[in-house]
Image (cartoon, rainbow, N blue to C red; front, side):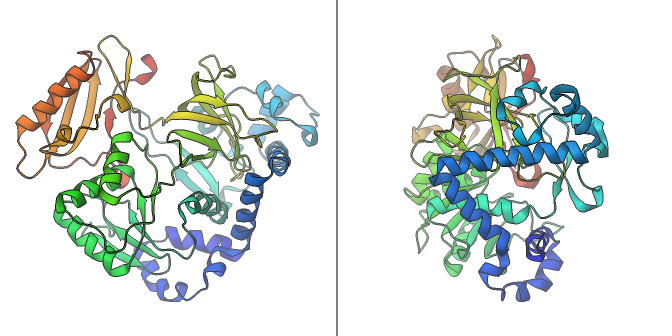
Length: 472
C-alpha cells in the first residue's frame, strides 16, 4: 500500500486538533498527490467498467476469485466454511458467481462468533469500525483495510461526478452534531479537504442564516450531507426567502434514504439542482448508484462487490418486481472478508446481473435495515413513508420538523417542532390529514419536542420505528 493511500484516510479520521495543526501543510499538497496513484487507477477502472461490459465481467470474476482464495488461504474461519460447502480442493481459480449459491448466507452473529479467525491479516493491520445500531439492532463491530480510503473515495467521487463534482471542488458538509468535543463550535472551514463543515444540530433558522453567509463567503457550490439535514436547511432557506449568491451545482446525499417529500423541499429551496445519490454500507460490501433520471432505481458496481437478492427462504429472486433481502460479497476491503453477507436491507428486483449489463444488479425501493421507511398498521400491514407526505404546502404549515415514533402496531406519535407562529393545532391538523390518508389504519397522536436528533452524528430519523419488524 502507498503512503498517501493510508495518509489521506488517517488525516480525514484524525481528531480536530491534529487536523488543525496539519491543515496548512496538507493544503499545499497538489490535489493529484493528495489522492494518490491508487485513487487514480481506480477512477480509471470504474470508468472502464461503466463503458465496457466485457471489462466489467472480467474484473468482477477476478475480484471474486481473488477474494475466495485469500479468504481460504488466510482465514481459519473461512477455510473451514469454504471447505465444508465447496469441498476440499475446490479450484478457486475457476470459481464462478453461481458457486456462491452453494454457500449459506452469513449474518453478523456468525462473524462476531468467529472473532479474529475471520480475519485474513493480523488484527493490528486493520481498522476497527462498527455500525451504530438502532431500531432494536445492537452495534456490530468489524474490521476494514487501512488503505481502503483511496478506493472508497474513487467510487464516491465517480458517483458525484454525475453532478459535475471533481476532486478540486469544495463542498458544504452537513453531518455531525458539533465540531468540537463540547459542541460549542458549529462551523469551520477545513482547507486541506476543501470542506465547509456545518453542525446539523439543532440548526435553527438563525443558524441557517449564518450558514448561508458563510457559504456565500467561501463560494461553495456542492452540498453534501444527511438528507434530513439538507431538507431542514432548505425549509429554513425558503422561510428566510434566502438564496445563495452562486447557485448550487449539485446535491450529494449520504447515509440516509432520500424521500420524495425531501426531494420536493430541496428543489423548492435550491432549484432543479442535480442530485447524485448512492447506496453504500459501513462494512464496504456493496455500492450502487441511483439513476439521475429515475429516482429510486439503483445499479450495483461490479468491481466493488457481488450483489444478490434473495427471499425469506434464502432463494434467489428472479422475477422483476419481487422484493427481497440484499446479500453482499465485498471486494473493496478484504482484511475481514464479507462473503454472502446478509445486509438486512431490502429492495425490489428490476434486472438481474448478466454479461450484457456488466454484472450490474439493478433494484428499486431500497429499504435500509436501520432506517425503516414504513409504519405498521393495526392489521399488521406495512405503510411505506412515500404514502405519508403529500405535496400540498399546507401539510407542513406551522410545523418546522416532525418525526414518526411507533411502539405498537396501529399507533404512532408525531413528535414535532413548531415553526415560528405554529401551534399544537397545526400538528393536530397534520395528524388528521395523515389519519385520512392511511384510511384509518393508524391512529396518530402529537407530542411537542425541542429537538429531533435521532442518532449518531445528528441524524434525524424520519421514522423512529421501535417495533420488531421481523414480525410484520
